Amino acid sequence: MKAIWIGCGTALVTPFTESGAIDEKALRSLVLRQIKGGVNFLVPCGTTGESPTLTQEERCQIVDLVARVSNGQVPVLAGIGGNDTKVTVQIAKELTSAGADGVLAVTPYYNKPTQEGLFQHFSTISASIDSPVVLYNVPSRTGCNIEASTVKRLSEVENIVGIKEASADLSQMNIICRDTPDDFSVLSGDDALTLSLIAVGGNGVISVAANEVPSEMSALVNAALANDFFRARDIHQRLLNLMQVNFVESNPIPVKVALEVMGLGTARYRLPLVKASSESRDKIVRVLSELGLCTES
Image 1: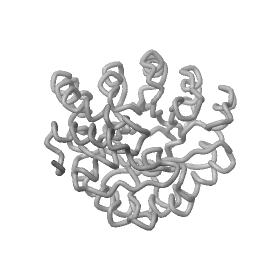
Image 2 (image 1 turned 30 degrees about the vertical axis):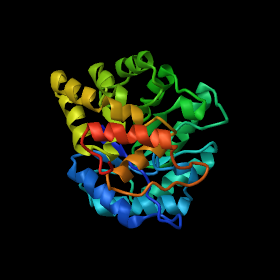
Image 3 (image 1 turned 90 degrees about the horizontal axis):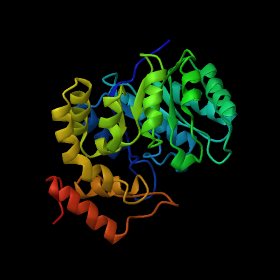
């Protein structure tokens, strides 16, 4: 089984109420706005969704809601992961039962497994479910890199269908695009590198910025995939400051500030994440003002 996840997927934020519960009303609005904006798939319960501080019950609640609101209009790729393979397998089973069409499996953190350990970890997850598995490589957060040769091995596993590449290593991304099958999706995990990755054979992005500008990010990816690099580059350059300011502090602190400034939510977090500094907030407001997205003066 191979299934290509292509285009622009949104790494959804998780809205919280004042009491700290999942804000289902705000999440529903966010999902509907993404679908209206033309994104190709939705990614709840990832890093941008503050997955480390979500309980398993809350992950199932979120995936169920996103799947019901989407109602088949776009597929749902649920974030999973952990440093215990057995626990991660259980999470994968429960989230696919809750309505996810596939899972985005991040590399184990803290353990720092070998490349063989990574191969065995992802192969075990794959063997436990019938749904597609997309690898997630983000060494800056996990302390562990999936090397291109290991990605190639994993791409031969039947239901491992792609990778979200957030290593920021363009050389590694090039090799992965070259050495994996045509039906294996290589997706950028960094908005600012989306255009570069598609130019060398990538298939799209799992985007933070799409929370704020779903139509624009979708247009960028669609243009690049259609080889209209003049249009894609124009959109990329216009959005570049936004892509960068989204990481002025740890993700998803800035993007939640941006959504609040745009009148699309309230910037609430769970510890150990805290609200943005006033300096960072000012930077975010300036960028949004330049793009005509700001409701604050």
